[in-house]
Length: 254
Image 1: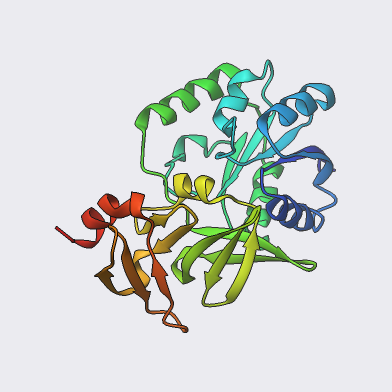
Image 2: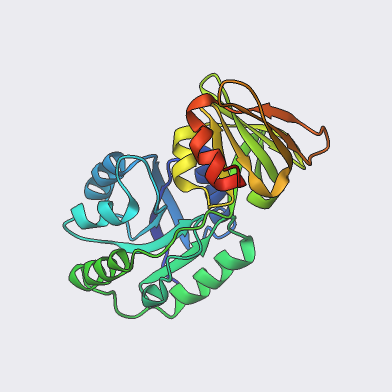
């Protein structure tokens, strides 16, 4: 008889938590999702109180990364990383105790995790896991976010970054302008700026654009620029004055 694993989902994005929960519900004989957490502090409290067999853990979370969370735990459960970054090079985690999933997570990838758990024998010690975490952190490899998740009605939508022309601050949310349409995200512009790859450029306090969509750019008054995008609307965006130096460097104005 296969073991049923008590499970906690840890991710700062509500759509990602819900999406993963729905996937795990397809495997009720393997996963018993007992709780979820939206940040490292909450996750630590719940892990120590509930002592789960497995945690599905996002790496990049505000305030406390997944790595930092594990370093705080007295006893580390089995860890299945689930992240939008695909260049952490966690081959060292491909053991019988740890798995590594790239967002957007697909049902068939969870099936592989289930098969891996069926052959599980010996759980790595907390010291061994922390040693590997330290080695990975010391590599300082470039992070690459490949997609972003948003919730629309009862659906979780995964949007590839290559399909996004620009992000725009919208009150307490961020509008995502993409080939699929416009969506709202709970991510802030500041948070996104720290996660997005190099082809995204912040040109205004409330705007980050995809440089691959730039059709043309011209100087404007007061150290500003007007940038026209090669999207369906040929969007014109006026940059912020404080971002002029970055724009000069990135777009070749000298």
